[in-house]
Image 1 (cartoon, rainbow, N blue to C red):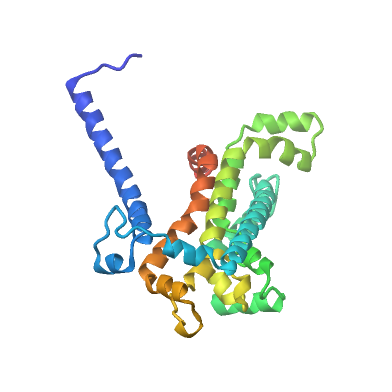
Image 2 (tube, rainbow, N blue to C red; image 1 turned 90 degrees about the vertical axis):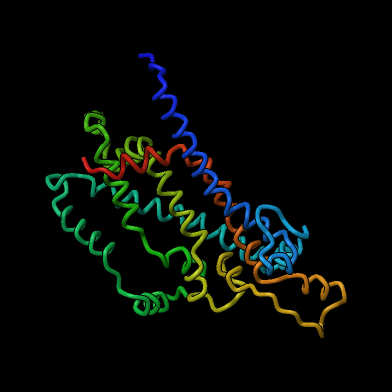
Length: 294
């Protein structure tokens, strides 16, 4: 069918294009502004003279961050946290979702476990019981505290459950006829077909583990164990003139918390911006099909 080109359709297409360009600008302007502030001199940022282009272009904020060995340790800690957290969270979520995607006739306690999940999603035990639990398990000041401290997001499990329930029943029946057991059914049939929703859940998990800073602040007693977000959240400009060379003093005096914080934010965005394009093609399909119950 060929779409008829009329004046009304052209006006509608023009308005739609203008709205999309406006939304794109609203998304890009904060990023460009943050980058511009991070590359500007202290006085220009403090006076509010920076807009979308740096004033007094310099890399002092980035040199201050990148020149610190603690930055790279925290960066590696966050990478380790994202890798372990993504694998464990997605893997356990898949194992939990598979039996819960069955009907009560196939899994008698299915509704009981679903009520537990819903209750856990709506209510939690609070910060102090959570902290005491982590401490009693010996997870303080440990990478596993960052990986396991957030638990298993129930929303992710529900997405995978609903996606599994929307898969054709005939494929499961054919696998049963061929003699496939539950494990073979899961890994050979369900998981390959559920790549979109699993990629979506993995993206959510990566963003969560990368951006989360509170667990590192509470569960880590040593600064060299901080993840990246906790480390840069604690950064401030401190000038110790007694132990500085003239060049160091000059460079530190040109910094401000405003330019340094802008550099922190921009650096923290880069890894997610790099990973997202590889997973975004699965995102729409996974979030829509996995969010609607059949």
